[in-house]
Image 1 (cartoon, rainbow, N blue to C red):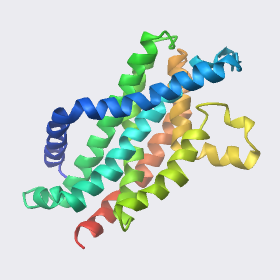
Image 2: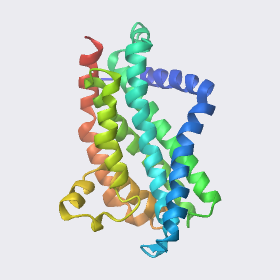
Image 3: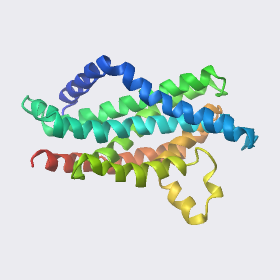
Image 4: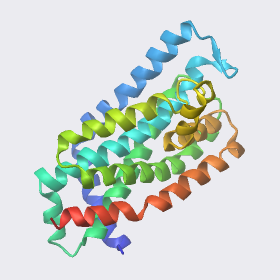
Length: 252
């Protein structure tokens, strides 16, 4: 078990480092989803006038919130975790204090979820400034972004715990993250996919987060409960695994 107090110290340490590097970090994570939004929304939007009764750029905008949030947690809990664990030896230094392995892992997951919420918030602000959100209810998506950030952080940290080297993350992003980004309902409804592919897409966390962000953006908060419950249940189911696998990795 972990201590919230000690885990929060790990979170605070990450926040302190982030405040020194936030300009470059935010810029890199901000530019890509905005480019996707306007390249796809304006470029394809010239050929696809409407999707589900709304302009195409308005249709994909909530998906950019979800994907930006997902990638923020994933990068932090894959590359960020691996570098601190293997190259910088940050974890070794932290574990030389009263902080134990579970405290460390919990703090890292909390930080990944925080970054997930932060980058999602930035995209919400951007699309709101461009008038691509129909309702202020979108702000209720923020706690959901934290929950989904925990889930993406758990999946990513499981990967970080088992990969033999940093280059192996290429498989994770190419075979899991990118297909999920493309086929989770951001750019088109998944019911247009073949039945088997549509069923697979349903079992991806990004699909449910996209649905939630889209419902909040449209001012339909009562439509989110099934997707929110799915995220909470899967987050709870996966929660023990990053702790178990990272403990093994840290004592090698």
